Length: 241
Ligand SMILES: Nc1ncnc2c1ncn2[C@@H]1O[C@H](COP(=O)(O)OP(=O)(O)OP(=O)(O)O)[C@@H](O)[C@H]1O
Ligand SMILES: [Mg+2]
Image (cartoon, rainbow, N blue to C red; front, side, top):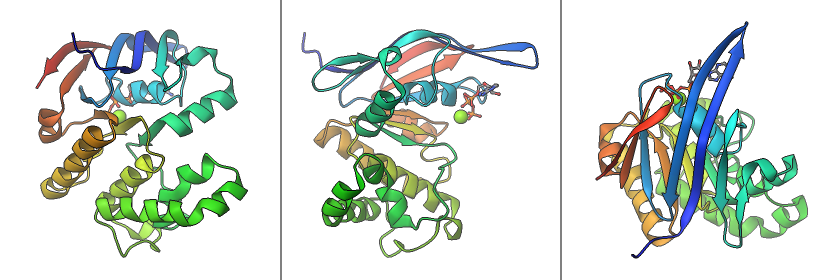
């Protein structure tokens, strides 16, 4: 069989929250296996735990139980074995994150927001030395998301869909092996959504970027390689397109 390399795997993931003496069991045994270059859509009703799962996979939160394995170029890394610094390093070199609520930094302009992951993953002297190439890369991504000419604008002067596109460009800045997107087309019209979809497709074909995207957008879901539907804290369907 011609199997592609694995990028991320999760086994038996649980995430429980307790607030005011009540325990909320959100994730109840998620198993996941995603290959290099795959585009996977995660579907499910509001509140089912999609963002919770993405936060775990993006190393922004830790599971109550279960394991996550990252297949990097040189080795397989199990998330719970990492120190806080190692988690941060893996996150910045391996993972790109497009948040549901964007989380753009209000004091930085559009270009600086896109450059942020490059800044975070380098020493300030390396960043200054490489600034020219990094800016060129950021401008290229800004062009891909259709925002050329807006580089100096502050996030609070952009529309919702424009902010979303900045968040997508920022998620791609470090050429992540794994791009995690939470509703990347939630604020986009169908034409812009189609452009983002084409950008994702091109990335997965040319660079082998693996894309896991939470979406309520039937258009994006229908075009993913595979759809996973979450019900009651587990995946119930694994549909190939
Ligand atoms: N830190 C937390 N403390 C307590 N409960 C939480 C916490 N984070 C998430 N939850 C709860 O977990 C459930 C799942 O939330 P999550 O944000 O993952 O849903 P979702 O599937 O992304 O929904 P949506 O489609 O609306 O974005 C919700 O009921 C939410 O209130
Ligand atoms: Mg969510």
